[in-house]
Length: 370
Image (cartoon, rainbow, N blue to C red; front, top):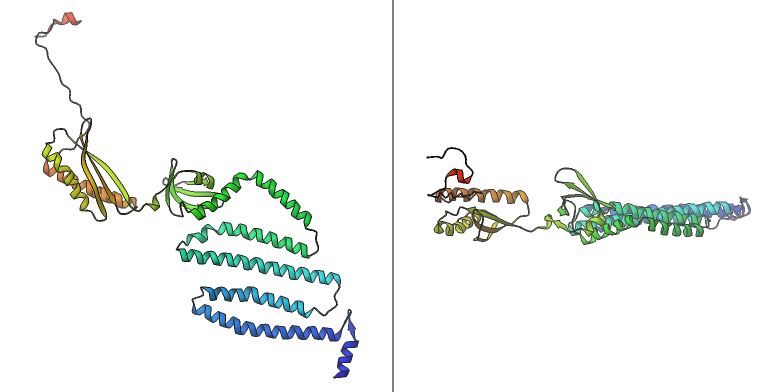
């Protein structure tokens, strides 16, 4: 045994004794065996807990973190430890450091991206706003791009490149780009305003300025709206944030005001009965709350009865169904009670004088009528 050890120590290969290579190999094998045990015991337990919870929740996150982050970092550390006692060339050390830095950068970026997506998904489920995950996908892509840029700079630094000039150039370029892209950055900032303040969400029906439609997509720079006429409106986020927006999706109930005109020949007793007729028609509808009905004014050709009621639903189709049912009841009741609706009319009064002058005196040159 001593002779074998002496042989291993005295014989060298590429500047390292055979004993050093054997020690590194033993460390690597033992470390791989321990890694397999950890993967089997801890990974199996986390997998069982995750499956029991329906592959959701903290156990699922712990399982993925263990598999995708902890174990790769363990094997990376094991590789570094196994090579620690070896005398390696500078070029090999530099390549090894580059590989290790690249793997660490990839693992860190993937871990941060995974945590961001998982946190967003959990937040969406918790708040009941599943569309948040869709809305933030463009932003997550931007964050991932920035993380990969930082990882690339970190990798170049570990490979021995002088990145101070690169960072300074990126800083100056960033200032120039920020000045040139003020509008884009403003839209990006207003994207965060829309996300956190939530003046509207996907699927909401809104009216702003002279445009109306349903929110179809909220992007980093623009929001896309499907107009009632079918075309797609593309509006900048800054334009929407600065505009007065009417969000009809947030309407709890719909207030309805309508007027009915009846003829001036309507008898006072029947006119007094009209508000009660309208009230009965409204209260006969389910999901409708009567507010008031009054003989409000004298119109040019009609006596005006004004009525207000509420539909306990923001749905426009439901409102139209209720209004139609109310109108039909009012028409039938008016017909039964002999109440006439008014429509634009004019009355022409003709006055005839008995002692008229001869037509010739008023410019008439024909025969005088008998």
